[in-house]
Amino acid sequence: MTIKAIIFDVDGTLADTEEAHRIAFNKAFAENGLDWHWDVGLYDKLLSVTGGKERIKHYIDTCLPHFVKPGDYQDFVKNLHIAKTGHYTAMLHAGMIPLRPGIKQLIGDAHRAGITLAIATTTTPENVSALLEIGLGKHWADHFAVNGCGDIVTHKKPAPDIYDWVLRELALSAPECIALEDSNNGLRAALAAGIKTYITVNPYTRHQDFTGAAAVFDDLSDLPRFYRTAGLPISA
Image 1 (spheres, rainbow, N blue to C red):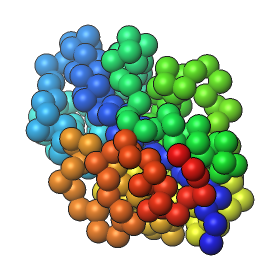
Image 2 (tube, rainbow, N blue to C red):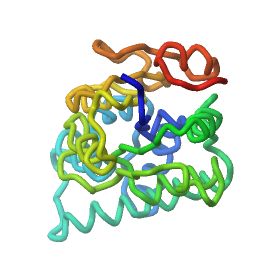
Image 3 (cartoon, rainbow, N blue to C red):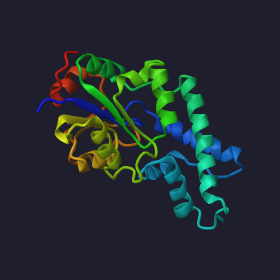
């Protein structure tokens, strides 16, 4: 079957964002008077939980047994995440988080070949917009038919909900699409939606289990190889 659409994850897939997210979380904690610090080892473990607000709650529940949750706990977490997003977008605008190798060309090649592009991510719309405006220009959204992000669905990856939502919006079946992911959670989500999935690893996900992936790449610096492997009707 001819592939009609490519569905992209964002964090770790379009750009190596996770280290920037970790730094932004720590800045948000410090400015809110919290002595919390997520080092690389801890953050690696916390990445098993998708979604920034969910990650904060998981950290509190599993690592801070004596933390007294404020009465406005949901707002507390929400405001921490808003502060974190502000620091993250500042890093983006400072040019500290470029797109990964091959990504910009892949998006352009696919768009010119008439292949529909979509996004399926747990990160916020603000993060997606900030990253892609810097990487692709102010008209970045013109490249994507569907932008599935943030809290559009209740259950985040590894649940398939965001991919199911994107498929409905695209009005395409799973076999007509491929997904590009970087993590085990993302792979499980896409596979559960029935979508053939390709992995590009990053330092945080390199040692994860990618059983079931169609192929695993270090990055997309060799786009002709990726196009051949994925059976995409694109000439690089």
